[in-house]
Amino acid sequence: MSHKRLILFITFGIFLLTGCWSQKELTDLAFVSALGIDIDKEGKYLLTIQIVNPSNVASGKQSAGQTSPITIYSSSGNNIIEASRRATKEVSRRLYYAHANLIVISEELAKEEGIYEIFDAVERDPEFRTTTSVVIANGTKAGDIVKVLTPLEKIPANKVIKTLEFSEQRWGEFINVNIQDLIKNLISAGKEPVLSGFKLYGVVEKGKKMESNQQSTPETVLSAQGMAIFKDGKLIDWFEGEEARGTTLILNKVKSTGMNINWKGKKEAIAYEMVRQNTKVSMKSSNKDLPSIIIHVRAEGDIGEVTVPVNLNDTNVLLEIEKEVEKEVKKEIKMAVQHAQKIKSDIFGFGEAVHVSDPKEWKRLKHDWNDVHFPQLKVEVVVDAYVRRTGIRNKSYLSSIKD
Image (cartoon, rainbow, N blue to C red; front, top):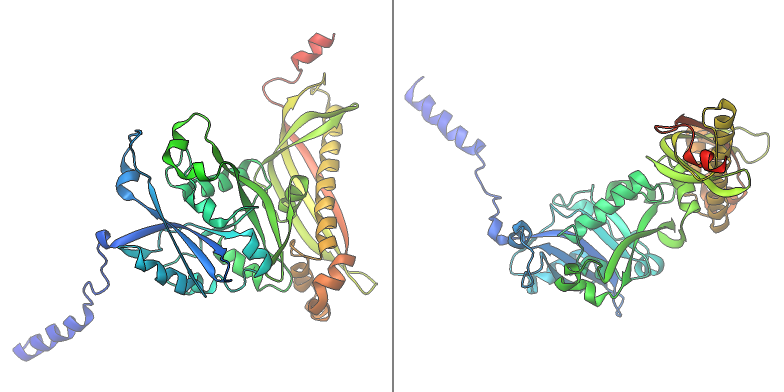
């Protein structure tokens, strides 16, 4: 290679090396773990920012003089970007959102202003992850949920996320929804979004102090509570208990749950632990002007507890238990559907099922789907439930006591 070609090759290579033009020193960053979004008295967005104190989180010691693992800053603005940038007047480091895993929206904001306009900024920003979870502050301010300190988990945002994940896995009345899924449902013409709620119990102000977590019983408890139902981007109602679980069953989001069934006149005598569930929603063509929907649920589970004498060796007994489970599942699903039809919000995606099955029919129905067609929709529920295991014994000791 000639001398001139070598120089030309090296010069060209320099332009390909970008270097560290975008480097960020750790000591210049403030790691945001959660955002709380409220609305202030002037109608502006009130942003509560939860920032991790790395040195305090890394410390494994608990002492009376220990400082908080998080620092809270608040600022307001006409939009999320303005509120975020305004916070830099108080924060000595650059706000870094790449590790933020939770957004909390106040119930007041979700009801009055809606959530349509909130997520453009975070979806547009390449630093913010669309896998971030979103929850609603049930009956309290979003800022209070972000501010409260929690036992077991040093970073409160992690407490909310883990509670949501384990409740979704074990209880079945909550759904962990991220920004990407939420936006998808917001823009869908055939499905309205649902979000899990979190509520504060106890003395809120005491929960913001480290002393609260140095007691065996915290004075402030942060708990998952309710499922927020939306229509046209605004929160319109809450589902709780059986209605919430009926909703997650239809949405095919139940990983496992426990339900009690009646037996021989005694209420909630047998605990059935559902360990697998699969739901299919489809449209059934009709000669009438409106199609109908079929919800087919297949559930498998174990016997977790019995409080009455029952012979689980008997195949007929197991078949009866399966029928009772099917009745309970069908009841909860129908409760959820009837409530949703009453408030005119298709949170189940029945409209999407119609769209997939018959695009031409959906084109005719979609413009007034929620207000006119969805409330009149006929919904058929088919449930197949199975008992797979009965535990390490079939005959309860209660049978011996009764004998």
